[in-house]
Length: 167
Length: 135
Image: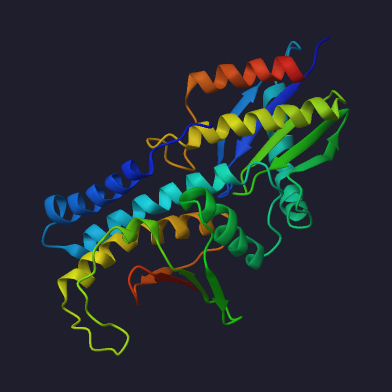
C-alpha cells in the first residue's frame, strides 16, 4: 500500500469523470449528475479515511476529526493542508483552500466576483461548480466514517481559491 | 495446543459482516452457537467502552467460563471481536492489526459495498492463516 500515481493523471481522471457524467450520462440533468459524482466521492472518502487512520488512535471529538481532515487527510490527498479553518462553534465549519489543485489548472474567464456582479447563469461558474461535487463527497464520506454525519457545500469566491462549508 | 478462537467483524451499523471459527480445538455440537451468542452479547459492553477511550485495542472486555472476549475498534467504528482462551495479549494485538490491514484492502476494492458481507475466500484463508500464526 505504498505505490504512487502521477498527479496529472489524477487531474485528468477527475476532469474526465465530471465531463462524462455531465455530458454523456445525464446531459440535461445536471442535478442528477452532481448527485452521482458526490456519491462516488462519498465512497472514496469512506475508503480513504479508513485507510489513513490506521496508525493513529481514534478521535475523541468532532474538532479532532475536522483537524485531521484539514491537516493529515488533505495533505495525503493534495500534498498541502487546508489553509484556513473557521467555525461558528455551533456546528458549522468553513474550510478554505487558497489554491485547490484540481481547479488550479482551469482558466477563469476574468469576471469579477467579489462585488456580487456575477451573472448567475454564467457557464464558466456553473462548470467549475460541477468539479467541486467530487471533493464535497470525499469530505462528507470521510466525516461520516469518522462518526460525524454532515452536509458539505462548496463555493468558489475567487479563483482558484474555494471554500467548503460543513454543518 | 488446542485453542478455541471465534472471530467476527461487526460494521458500524451493527451488522456482522464476517465470522469465522479459527480455533484448532475439536468442536462440540453447540459450541459454535455458544461462541456467537457470547460475542453478540458482548457488543453492548463494547459500545459503552468504545466512547471512553481513544485507543483502538480494547483488551479483554468480557469473560465467560474460561474464555475471554477481546475487541479492536477502528476509526470508522468497525469492531473486530475475538473469543479466545489463550492469554497471549501481544499476539492478539498483532493479529488484530494484521486483520485491520486486510480489511482495508477489502474496503479499497471499488466493487465492495461498505457494510456488506465479506465473501472473499482469499480473505478467509488469510485470516485463518493469521489466526494459526498468532493465537
